[in-house]
Amino acid sequence: MRALLARFPRLLETLPQAPLQLRESPVETWQVGGVTLLIKRDDLDSEHLGGNKARALELLLARAHPAHTLLTVGASGSTHALSVAAHGATLGVRTEVITWPQETHAVATATASRMRELAAVTADRSVLRAYLRAAWRRMTRSVQWIPAGGSVPLGALGHVDAVLELADQLTRAGQPMPDTIVLPLGSGGTTAGLLVGLALVGAPTRVVGVRVVPRIVANRGHVLRLARRTRSLLAGLTGERLPPLDASLLHIEHAAFGGAYGRETDAARRSATLLRRAGGPLLEGTYSAKAFAAALDYARHSPDDRVLFWLTFDGRWLATSTDQTASPPAR
Image (tube, rainbow, N blue to C red; front, top):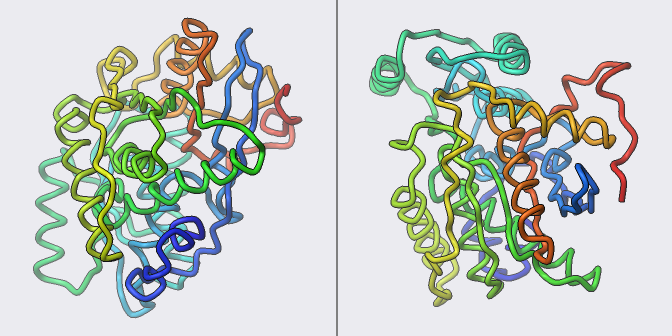
């Protein structure tokens, strides 16, 4: 949260943070599949378990205590739920996760397995039943509720900070902000935070959210409402008048979904393979590979634009001594 605290020093008093030891994630330039892309490596924002969820949890776990139990929900291979369990464990806090089924693949299966090592997992039959069970837990037991995806205004402030961090990094490097940022769109917290951050830095950067969940969850109205609530929260915490949001910057790419949450697509598999061959990190078929395929398309069709892919998935814990050990991507 260094960038946001530097912009608004009052937040030192009004915005408590959990000691997750997050760090600035690097910005790199990749050459993949014949195109050049920038990448924001949020997979490297934590020594423990990186990714976009860590930024939200730095705020959502600020009041977590070993006497508490964290409660969250997600699909059986939810990276959000895994992140809650992993970062909760670093704070000495127990986590309970209520899951629902999803179409699966190797990374989702591995995520579910690791989640069971770190948390008490209850598998339910549907999204509705999982939320009803969670509501009952919240009414009858002392738990700290962490919303699905961490996508509430407080969590989204972590992604506002990420944009200010990006702007500082590019300024230090003497580079302009990208023309387009491409990222996965699930519960919407990261996308909403980026929109607020871009308003703060005054950048006309297009934000392309690549939808990877059903449209009822990921849609333009939901993202903009969350962004406006995040802006209002920040205004209240800082006591300052903030720039308005530019809703025209938000674009949602629907074609990558594949018909079901967690269902891999041919385009996603191809994009992940291209990245591995270029020496880059592991992507997974639920979120990051679909968004990376879209980022490659944007870069191919708009060669004069600076396109940045926001990497939200940390696959380092899946690394083996053979496949996942890679040299840096071509620069």
